[in-house]
Length: 361
Image (cartoon, rainbow, N blue to C red; front, side, top):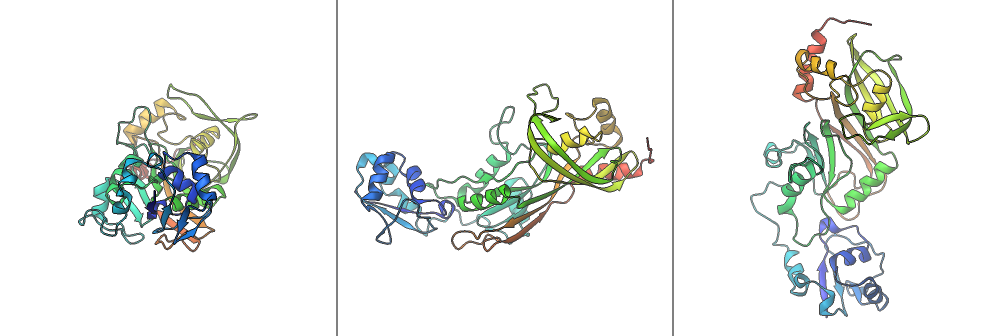
């Protein structure tokens, strides 16, 4: 039995063995390896090896299969129909926006502002109050990644294996730049960039008091805490935890408050919040690391209903080119730069802070 499988854009960049293990889920690993050894798996009529990297549009020919080795959909030839050039989704769906110019109509369709979208990458300006992934207390369909997958569903072929995925995360009440990979190759490249320090994030944080010195570095072990009562989930430790580094710079000194630019060199849970609180400068409005009474006062005086933390800027350095012929702006390496403006609620709170008398301790 012969089965032909056409590789979609979102499944490109995978090794042939991994793709076939997922695409032909009923086929045992031993049987798959035997097909490779017998040169029964071919591309353009030539046998390929297990580690061959697939590209968009490749048509794999898998010979020697039994009916029980494949699912009903593949056996009936639906994979070829799904991969046909005419199967492009609804004609009225808006096309990808040019870099940095995502249309307002697409943002309304998703329900989240879009900073950038191309064939491989989606960059959002995540609002506060939305969790990036599902979990306890999150209604089905309400997380960012669920909304994104629903938004992109019409652009996907029915048999695609890859699902759009978060490259990094933001806390539910943190707003700002959030990157989502639309293809497997994009996810691998960006995950690699993140691993080797190619992600440079700058946050804007309003804190209580004025740090001394005005610019500096907070480093040390940060330990996870099992807290289910609304308390801290991370704390600075002398003997346990993961090494964490946070750099800050005072952008504006208000006397009783300071606006900081914060760069994290490691991405630990609640790193910025825990580090700054450990220095006596908790984020304004932070319910876990700040004062309940002071936060209640901030709600009245500043109109601030959440933690003042915003992921304003993200630079991504790409070292390796993307696989295949794609529109991803970093496909030849280089730097990607994204910016999310300060949202209205934080901008309004900052204006009120500026209008208050500068009371110093």
